[in-house]
Amino acid sequence: MDYKSISAGRILCYIFKLPLLRAVITDKGYLKLQYRVKMGGRLRLAKPRTFNEKMQWLKLNERKPLMSVLVDKYEARKYIKKVLGSEYLIPIYGCWERFEDIDFSKLPNSFVLKCTSGSGDNIVCRNKSMLNMKKAKKVMDKALKKNYYWGTREWPYKNVKPRIIAEKYIDTIDEAGLIDYKFYCFNGKPELLYVSQGLEDHSTAKISFLNLDYTKANFRRSDYQDFDILPPKPHNYDKMLEIAGILSKGWKFVRIDLYEINDKVYFSEITFYPCGGYMPFEPEEYDMKIGKLLQI
Image (tube, rainbow, N blue to C red):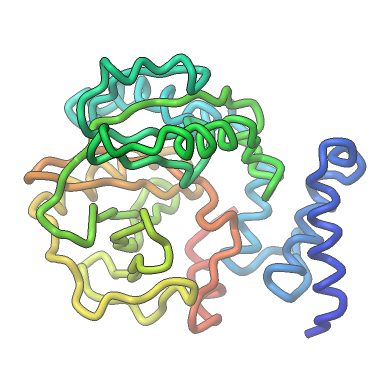
């Protein structure tokens, strides 16, 4: 691995994110550079073989208007309501274009603020009287200014209108936090999943890949702690598989994220390029093995 070229690549990737230089390099050129920086190898777009290579291919070659709807945390709710029903949606209290527009006096004591156009830019408020308004505004203002497309050239985010939603806070018995069930679906069929918990704090969060029979897979993400003991299998696991199949129909690949709360299934989000297409598989050979599931 040429560490000098990777260091130079990191600098170039940063430079090409700057507003004045974004048009200088094409999406294809940027992804080739970024792939070498993040993965330490050449991106084969003519004949992609690994899962991560195929994610980059999909970024460039699968661009349907519906994708921009599905990655928008507000607009996606309308789609889920139509396809599944409103009972699968966590209630929200409003949607605003600016932090200043939120009337906090009308919000309940606990809630979650999310930016509709990004990932991970959340404010979890468990007690409104303790909310650091200055910090919350800073986080939301930064999220509203960020166009998620430019970081990893994920086209669906390019024209999503950034807004803020306030979502109902879901309390859980487990102190480690809410559990996510993320189903990897290929050509409308769930093939594997990973379970995550505590993503509010990435330094302590846990993630494990599973087979569909809810046993641990033989690979993991190297950037997160693995579960020593898996969370219990959801009571509505079969229903989750059914929903993942419905929502993934018509897509070469998509990840369907669901919750089970008080024995009810809820929609979380839809993701087209997990980890931006730079998933750190361990062992690395599973990048190739999982890539075989994705027919492009």
